[in-house]
Image (tube, rainbow, N blue to C red):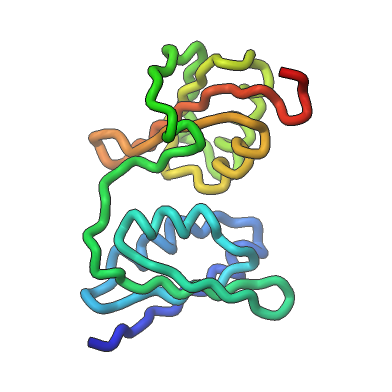
Length: 177
């Protein structure tokens, strides 16, 4: 069976400062069996690779001229997983403490939720946990948390519309432990 591909070019959205995740997921959700997605972006969408991998897609990435990227997502033939997206702490099964701060960012437009989460995390001590509610999976937040040494866990709530992320504050990079 030959895979056919639906092209999605999010470069104009990204250049305008927009967040294309919703458009990408809408395109993925209407793919028919045997269809894949060819994505064009202004950067390599690393977090998206994991998201679509959990939905049963493999990918091949190719850098284009000017630092832009083409990523071809093909159905892998393996069933998608329903696992929540997880960060660096997923490999550590120890219990996390209860969150000491809770944010409801569902009414904010990107990039405000990420800015608010990162600003709040800066006020917290290592080991403390922050909980945040969002309208979508915060793909661009995860690399920022990793850069700052934080761990995270997250997934969609039972309503399917609310994404809850837990952030455990880490020791800032470059600090003495």
